[in-house]
Length: 399
Image (cartoon, rainbow, N blue to C red; front, side, top):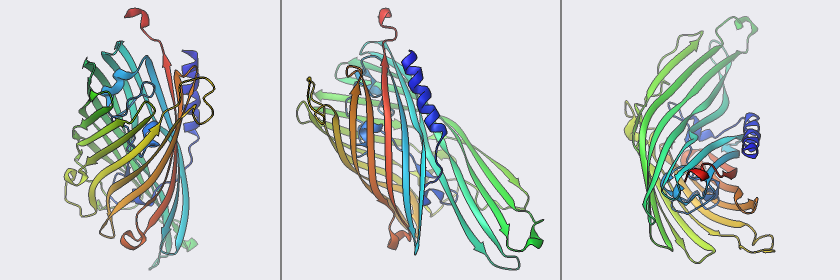
């Protein structure tokens, strides 16, 4: 266990030194930031797919039912780095952000039958800063800083009634906070005693349940899907201000919507497989009051993977998994009364270590978010993800 805890500590230290930045499209007024959707770093390299892709090393965080393919107690730790270049009119800005993406632990209770475990991952994320000049009776510069996000934690139990099928039941709990901070800097020193700071903090928490299922009718074809039921959230708003404020910027969410995903995987032969996934949420149905700035969220991805060659001296590229894919995502907000779409290409690698029992996975996404003509803004982005999947032989003597 010493090696596992050392690696875990290393990743947590890396996460503590995160860089600050974010997407322009995450800062929509009254919004929750950008939806964070992850199928694991292996799937990330395949167009953010992988719901039905069988893996005996990486712990999945959506189709928990596929834990039955894990051959021992497993832990997966994910880390990401994101770089955005924003174009708004004639202006260009570059921001970066890096942080811990998620952690998953799966423990077999009975080999290929029962598993239990824990997962935690970001659910939404917002981190954006901008400024504007206000001219009037009093001239000042207003700095708008929005940051924070919501996390989803799960307690999971999976069961395989027959070798061709897996089922899971998941207890979900959402928690987190988003902070809107407004700082005023006055051009005239005579106004330095005027109120200069206003902060609104929104705290979210609430439970829900979910389930997943996978089916392998024949060896070459796998189907899988999951459903996270609607979560009724407790929203608490805290004002920290020196100035009178209105509730115009208040979040008006009464719930997080039902989230579902379906996927398929086809094995072309022992080394090549193709995956196709679709996932969606109707955010517009969970508002206290209707808001024309909100849209529904959806994700489509397709990917291909070539598995490593299991023999000695296979060579550099034959000794690793190689992946590629394409994805298109609808972000769930309207900018300039038009929906915002994100398109990206993906590549990835899986490098085994310790006699191929564990693995490092790398995923790279390069894409465009938004449209200059339709949304009046466009972002070019590069996202990089890395994960370590580590296994231990827990409870083997008890079986």
